[in-house]
Length: 281
Image (cartoon, rainbow, N blue to C red; front, side, top):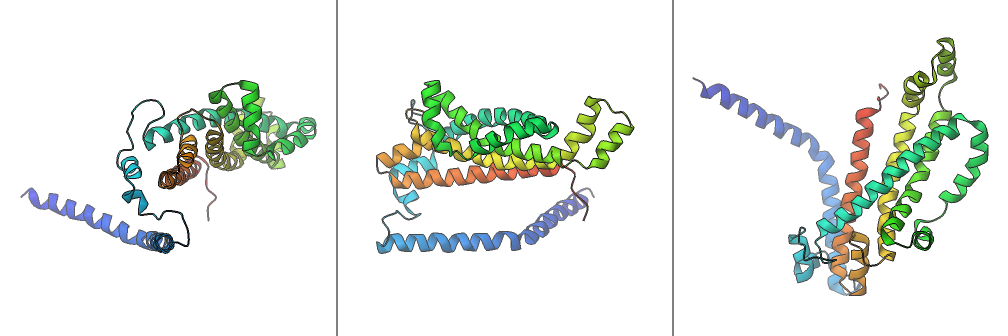
């Protein structure tokens, strides 16, 4: 008597899963087909000798790369670590530098957006500094800080802070005048105005800056680690592999970089959709 409802419930959940999977096929299938064509073309070009770059099959046929692919948690000490630990070390630096950039960028953005005189004074400086490439900051950071780790954190910070700062300032400036008028009529305190009007109104712009900055921070740490030597991180891993002509290992690292960057962007987009109210359509 009790088995039939359980089977019905199980079948119902399975049918719901299959139905949801079928709905996602139009979204999943085209990129999979495009990826398969790209990888096949790449492998054919490698076999033909047109390019010296190893094909995607080298990730499996090369013994060193296969070991890295199969054992990402490998740790022999020192710099000889698997891809998980290399990526984790880079992500830790990104988390620290990005957090400082978010705090400073949002704080300065609100200050600039609410104070016209500060906007006029600081905006040209911000626009000038944000045009400096991340790699250009590396020798300056090394000369000033004398150590790889804080220099890498500074490069992440100075790369990520500008989109957060500028987008926050724009968001604050875009607050509708009606909202400001209402706050004056209701005689809201600065704290009430900040939390009830300024932050909710500027939040979409702030998240736009945060989403742009997380991608730039990930790119910056890769560039910084390539230049810096003797540290665990996926950027230095790429440079070391290049110096030793381990091209297949570079390809594997690039896959990790792209995958992590995509996850960071999608994670920030999910957080934005969860926090920022969406306009009804």
